[in-house]
Amino acid sequence: MINRYEVFETNSMISDMNLDVRTITLGISLLDCADADLEKCCSKIYDKITTLAKDLSKTAEAIEKEYRIPIVNRRISVTPIALVGASCCKSEDDFVKIAKTLDAAAKKVNVNLLGGYSALVAKGMTKADEMLIRSMPKAFASTDTVCGSVNLATTKIGINMDAVRLMGEINKQIAENSALPDSGDCMKLVVFCNAPDDNPFMAGAFHGVTEADAIINVGVSGPGVVKRALEEARGEDFEVLCETIKKTAFKVTRVGQLVAKEASRMMGIPFGIVDLSLAPTPAVGDSVADILQEIGVEYAGAPGTTAALAMLNDQVKKGGVMASSYVGGLSGAFIPVSEDAGMIESVEKGAITLEKLEAMTCVCSVGLDMIAIPGDTKATTISGIIADEMALGMVNGKTTACRLIPAVGKKVGDTVEFGGLFGYAPVMPVNPYSCDNFVNRGGRIPAPIHSFKN
Image (tube, rainbow, N blue to C red):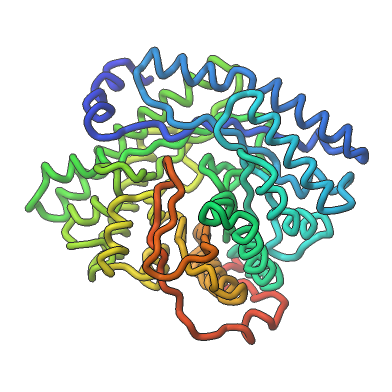
């Protein structure tokens, strides 16, 4: 049982250390909205979302008022739309119409973002999958709240290289469609290996087909809280350091558990999971990179960074799983460049490179996230970067992802501005050598041998 004392204990964390609940995400199954008639399908989608989510924002506000816990975002995730629209969508424009319906429903219920304009194509693409993917540039340009993802690989299946190649092209098209300002629509797209069914964080959230009709998922934050705790353990050995992180993660996760349970009770919708990821913001004092510096590296990217991040990620998970019955989603330390003031500084100092970020993603959540690259980067090069990240997830049996912004008209050293929680990012250099012949082979990279455990 969670009591009020536990919440009041965190008051200083909230007021002084940037602790917040990053999101309440209402997952909604749209499988029963599928219809051979596009108009009927859109009508069912709109009605179901606006009915189930009508009290989401009001509930979040009530919890904020009662417990004085900031809840930064209210979000919705839905069944991958490639599945929902398979029966009625005969063209890319048909899928765009569904995207506009989703956007209208999200605005009606006053949520910040809606995820699930997605396709699951690790083994192959249906016609509906490919149409949805090719519709993404227009869909994102036509909507404000809609986000999407494509799962390209899994440990059990391998990597769909045809889809990887296509996503490099789509990423470029999205960037060009939103060149002003700063190719910002690329923020709405994530590509995954081993995408989880219950991720509350955008842009990768979708409501998995194994989930109930509707669920409440909560994503907590708290890098500032962990950093402050570690300041009290300066000079101590790793045993003390690890214990400090675990205890802090426990307290942070208990706040998320309370919010999830209260939202579930008030809305009459089952509680799903708490995602205990350390999700940074551009605010000073709310940085995962700053935690790494507190652990002992001069800047994120210095020798020892990957080991420090691995330890941090593991201790966060160990503390979090003791605090909640149902931990899920991604649940690890995020290292998005634009959303983390310390990561931005590390890039500006030259301490961190794309290759070092790739190495760091082997031990944390989630991948190459919110990284600005030169606008003239070739589509095949983007596909190659995606393929490398998919391989890390496939071989290590973990979730990895890419959210890349090829900023049109920008070159290395320039800066792209996104605003709000998305922050800004220096444009990072990309390896100039070609991978065209590799990407253009087509087909599927088989699953690794250790995946055959049935």
